[in-house]
Image (cartoon, rainbow, N blue to C red):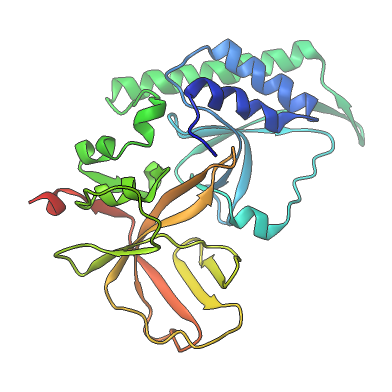
Length: 292
């Protein structure tokens, strides 16, 4: 898929709401009332929620800039989806985010009836005010970062910050951009593994879902990678350098992205000839050491 402009990205977000009139109404009204191009939003985004009852959850409307997400509760809500298709998608780290719920119905005895538009609009106004308050708080604490669509995918953004962290949901459109954080200066590349010169580390771009030859899994609340071949053939022993992992995912618009999920090391106790295990040893990388 070709590169999208910010305008195309925004418009295509709404395609996912087709056939969901209540969600469409609430989401579009929230965004029109908010009317703030500095606040990033994503519709129908999978996240790792603050609670640990699920490995992932689909937020109806997410605000990464504010670290908040909205659940729109309808009378009849079917959130079932084939698990493997979810694993392929980009899942945002949201364990420190706050959630807010807007129900589109009211209970009348044992029945659920549609909420009036007047009441629904009132609920939406309350939520929009909460979003505005959160932005003011972040500005006051000098933690607010305005949404810059292009800068979000630029390695220069993170080189200037001098670090990357799992909670920042760092992702790149191309492997070369992830590798630039570690001194790479060449063009496009499609290798799944690249050793960082001068360090006992390598960058790994695994597909953490079933694919042509591999059965790869994120386990233990994203803290463990389990890797094996579909035919269960011998893998041999893995290299013992740390692996800086940028997982191969599809974002909400179907674009390939490489998302930073942490630094992993071989679990020697569990790893054998047909199954490799890697445990996360760090959620953050300080980048300055790669430019000395």
